Length: 176
Image (cartoon, rainbow, N blue to C red; front, side, top):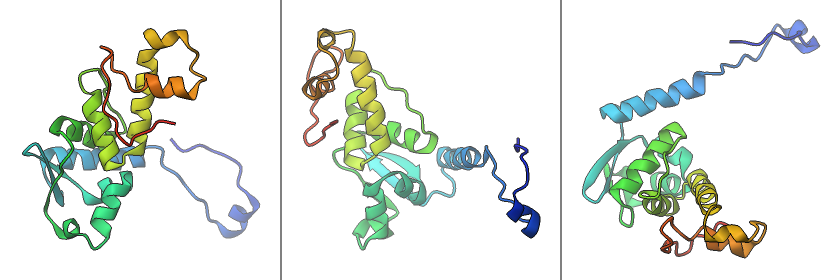
């Protein structure tokens, strides 16, 4: 719903007013997500673990420097209809795409490693940020909780453990 306010002097002189829709961004992204779900108007198919996922290059490039480089530079993939993603599981890619199109992700212990690997590989920085916050919150009630989270080393150590205490393989990925 548009908010009412007093007209500025410039608006009174020119008759111009910049109007803003609160729902436009969300409705456009929701429509693109529905197109992706229906497999219509998509211009790229991503493949992970032999499973295919339809998507829009523009949405992917808007969310990820990895995809922006892939689709806009003179790379072989820029003109391809299908791209095989190595180093990303189908579960991780599915979750990453869901996040790219909705801004939401359901994180849980059984998927966090796949999501982190996909987020890291695909350079989805917002997704990695959410994953790191999730891991810190989950670690607060465990062995790491006896040390304040003000320590960078503690932050790094806690964010590298899963709920069962096993280590995550996050080579080259730092949350500092």
